[in-house]
Image: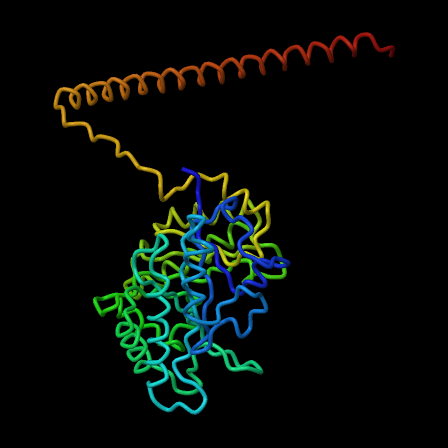
Length: 359
């Protein structure tokens, strides 16, 4: 079957520039689902999204899921940034509130092709920018805040939590990843997927990313999370939309070869027509049924026959080797004879020239 992948939307304004309604017709694109940002901490994304279809409240979550994407047979899953702490908060109470809001959004979005109440958290270290952002380890966010978020998420009815995360090892301790990963060991709700941000185009900018860059970044991500006990089947790499068509094809194939459960692409506004068409032209490696080749039964007669044939082959090779050696020796002898004849002829030629020359 043709490949369709989930596509990420940060803001409606950047994903659908110049459009007053969304989507114009996303059924023409190779999208199985849309992962759309709904909130940043306790604030809805519509605060920063200039599009009239931005997410301002829970009602917008339901409308976007059912009326916009669900109506076109496209799945829709919400995502948001988790902070853990905020200015003025000195306890896990803020993380608990974040978890509850995430759970409410997940419940509101359940349906439209998504059976569970799923929510994706964008888990990245705090960036010391002019504005506060991401996981606030600088304010003390840590293991207790992870537990509080998960508790709040469950209380609000959340069922599955997927973690979108920078896979580079130096960033994992800063976001208390080990505490999040323990939720995959049976804590409710189970963290059912890890979505590593394998942005190999960004990691090598300004040069154009090549196949080797994708191979290295994807392999490192699988290896890194494997050390935390995360099996490849629960790893779903996020591929960068700016990748060229050929490198995108390679990255998708490599993700499947590494055993990953699937892929998605960030983000819609950066996906070119050529790369989208290249994705649409692929067969779905995760959807194709793999037929196992039957293992032939042990047959003693066949084995004996094969061994006898092997023995005969070895004998033939020994004979052939002997023939080749004899031939080589014969050629050497012929060469020696020719060299001797050459010397005699050359001497006779010199003698004839000497006799012809005047005294």
